[in-house]
Length: 312
Image (cartoon, rainbow, N blue to C red; front, side, top):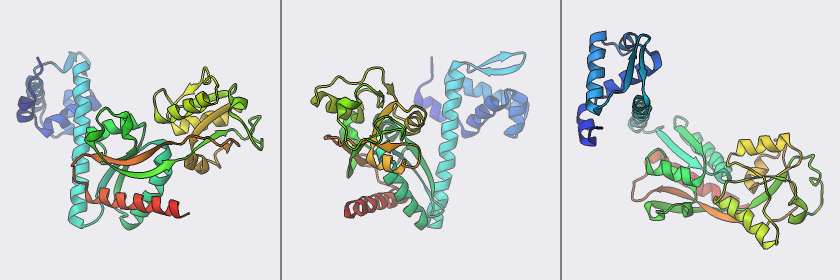
């Protein structure tokens, strides 16, 4: 039986977790002991203490050395996360002591990436020693990272969550949408288009139940058309762009800001104005959790960026 959390917290030490990572990297207790600067008997004793703390074997002993079992691989994965978090903690402490720098982890859905990138550029001009981690993903996954404390902020939508009250949200911007294709698509040069003219081409679409997918489904439904069959589903900006570059028959929908940023990457807008807009994205953080100094600065930069777009 796996030990209770209170027991794990009281018995495990950071140096033991470092030994687990070294065992995974080197596959040998002797080499791992050398790496963490302890004797081999000390490493053997530490590993026994670790397995005793968890209440289960984490490694299989073989003639070739030690090999992590399924439970061991799980523990090692979290040991690496804890080690990484400690490194990030140190970066933030140094930044606070120096009165500048620090670290921030921020996520964004595809349509928010241009705003985030421009805001980060302004922020890093003022804070050049700031360390930044950027994650692009779906709203659901970004909210999960917010829940886990892996992200300080996310530019996404909380409507996909069953617990929207768990977040503090600031409105940022509505999201205009654009249909795009390869410049050599048969309809790329058309002066005007209707959705039924595009229906039978191949499509790249967002996965089911994502806000952007729901918008496109609504467009087809309101036009009395069947949604494209056998579409390629992806939430990845890079994958979408690569597919469009490769296949002259493909059509995709993406945020207009992204389409404009990708104008030099082998995609062009199609002459069809969508009636629907995607749900606005928000600046999301954990409810009632104070923001770090870098997170507050990024919030200000994002709000200034939205204002400059509105003024334009």
